[in-house]
Image 1 (cartoon, rainbow, N blue to C red):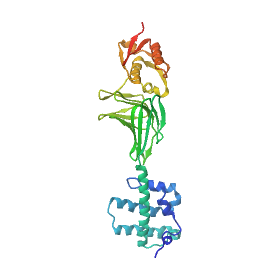
Image 2: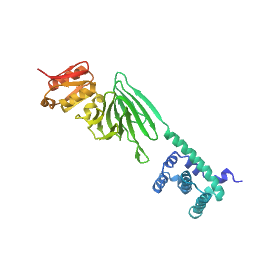
Image 3: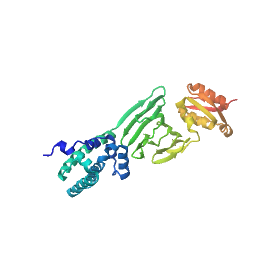
Length: 342
């Protein structure tokens, strides 16, 4: 009767290899591990080089058994090839570590290792498939959060967000207004998606800084850096830095305003740099969720100013903008009335 020690010998490399988290991750990918990936992994972990051939044959047998039926003849060919390779290339060192084992004993050995690998793979897949969920909310003031993937989220007041992460990617359900700095993640050579979505508005993120407003009345995306694809009701738009897009009567439209104005609540400072009055009125509308009533002439609307305004006090903001643009901003119940100073 063959004992456990006789089958494994003194060398436990195969056991260690098939329980190595990095090796489990390598063999967990959907497609067959190619030559380059295989050699690269064993170059990174040279202590396992001695058993690389055996490990590969075991892995390939496991892979092909999961995709196509494998006959006993194929199994025997695999293990005869392994033994022949040990005889011709690895010589005494290999035989001393792994022993001269008959084909049937190799099959027993294979069954043990494949079971170990499959068990480890199941654990790995279970971990990657696990859904991580976090919820965030603000009341009377903005707040900064760090998401589980390392991304930064600034939530404006009276806003909520629910984050979920699983093997397919990252998702954020956001209600209200939030500013995001999304970290890039690569999985098997592909960018891991980050999607912000709620009530029909969907933003697909590719490592970026952007602002999103998603309420019953307002749906807007302002991009500071990177790229995003905004989509609504089956239509989408690829945005570039500086773009501001909103949903107007069910259609995505670009707004004539710079993104850093929309995103100024996150820093607390409205930074005007040759900013037109037209842009400011759009900013007022989306910042305070108020309509604008104005009959100013076009030359006044195109006038520009520069400067900085502290956003901590609303009345101070309105007064400062009035002084800079030489206009009067009168706040009514549900709108701002804009008129010229007399």
